[in-house]
Image 1 (spheres, rainbow, N blue to C red):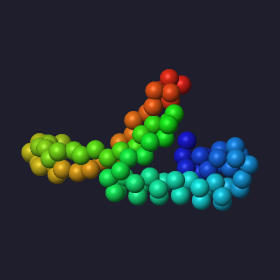
Image 2: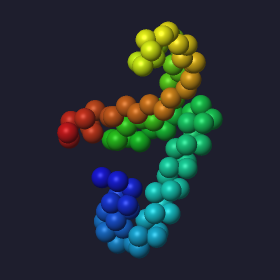
Image 3: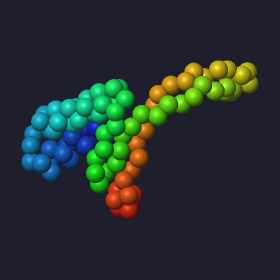
Length: 89
């Protein structure tokens, strides 16, 4: 499912227009982004938890040449599904 299909599904289920559904989805994604950027967590009971994880710097290999390269440390978004969501899959 892509974003357009999700917007259509939200609009159908909530009986709102696609424009309103797109605005709601954009607002949700903006809220998640701001929360994670500030270092916080977003917990949706029954769905899962969005959080930020830190990846340490490490050495890797260039697949084309085989040369060792340094990969910088970075922060990544992480999602952990709730027990309830996992049980439905």
